[in-house]
Amino acid sequence: MAGQTDMELIKDGVRLDGRKADELREVKIVAGVLDNANGSCYLEWGNNKVYAGVFGPMECHPRHKQKADRAIVQARYTMAPFSVNDRKRPGYDRRSSEISYIVSQAFEKVVMVEEFPKASIRVDMQVVEAHAGTRCAALTAASVALADAGIPMRDMIPSCASGKVNDVVVLDLNKEEDNYGQADLPLAIIPSTGEVVLLQLDGHLTPDEFEQALDLATSGCMDLYKKMRLALENRYGGSA
Amino acid sequence: MGKESSDKSDSVSSRKLVLPGDLLETKSKPGHGIFRRDGRVHASVLGYSSDQSGYMNVNAITGRSYTPKVGDKIVAICVETAPSVWRMDIGASFNSTLHHSESGWKVPFGDTARFLAIGDAIWAEVFMVDAAGSHQISLKKDDCRKLYSGTIVKIGPTNVPRVIGKQGSMITAIREKTQTRILIGQNGHIWIDGKGNDIATAQKAIEMIDNEANSKGLTKKIEKLLEK
Image (cartoon, rainbow over the protein chains, first blue to last red):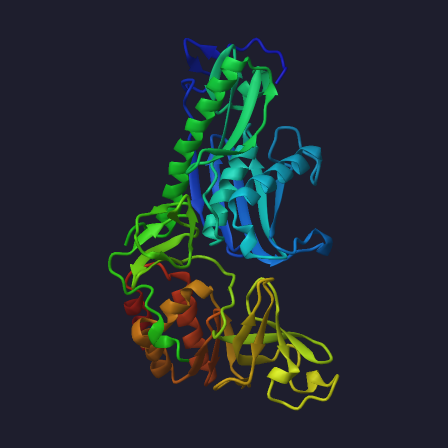
């Protein structure tokens, strides 16, 4: 956001990577890739590459974070030092703690936390390659990993961003569009009810554009949801 | 092992894979693996739905964590001793408690480790689960006892019915072919005792079932493995 460029991000309705305004990047999802996690997922989304692993439910540490009547979801989002062009200093920072927090909040809405009092469900997300939209990619991967771990939940949550580039509302920003675009709106929904569990906005949108962006991101989420289902059906053999 | 004949989760031919949140069309009562929203039944876990004897269930096929149920026979491993209780690992999210009064031994206060030390295994029954999620196990039921020698294999609790097989066919085959004694805990901990090589073969077979629990023709593969 807010960067300046001479690049023409959209020309005749076609974007830099050849997509139309309402097209997602290519998504590949594989469930159950990590041996030592209870459930896991590997996701490629355009040039993004993310691993997610789920551990627990297990006893919650530190103890003061325990809830007597329900479990908490402890999500942890980390970016590998080699995931971006300039080496990222490893470890926790403001951005990753923010993302970890909002992802935890999103999952506590769908996971049946009341079934595991005092427990903690750990969701680890590792971004191996970042190319804009990693929080959505990480959340999506973590959803599949949670289902793969057999954790009871009300639904899986797909997550997808929309935004504004050259005054056009587009779906799923890529790196250039994210850096030089005018707005970025990551969204996560519960597909069966349409409830919103994550919504952020960076940049400026008029009320009309906001509605348009929200609709676009919602349809993107629904597309993605089909791919998540397919990944799990592939792993578990579909209807037998 | 009274559980063997009652496991019927994969005897249904029309089973259908459902994912969390999927709507289940049914007039049956809600069973396990489901939740209700606006009076309709949805799946809460990934698994196969079954609409049997008036209940709608979803049998989970993934997950490494065991949810204790009263009456389950399990294999538990001691992880901690306290003056009057043992803390036992049963593969659930929390360790289970074995109180000395449920052990069947006359334990002097503070002398628990003499009867059951860290690392020792027992064949026990879950006898209490409370709403706060804590649970206790007992050694005073039926054939419950301390387990000497042998080895313990840990598999996913959801794959236990596959290891047992229809009417216990799979486990009977493994027992007979390998000449081992096997106890299958509902928690996915399996105790095997016998000669060294036999244990290894049985262990290999059980691990194979765990890894390929959702594939077809598993019985044949296991038979082939046991023939070697």
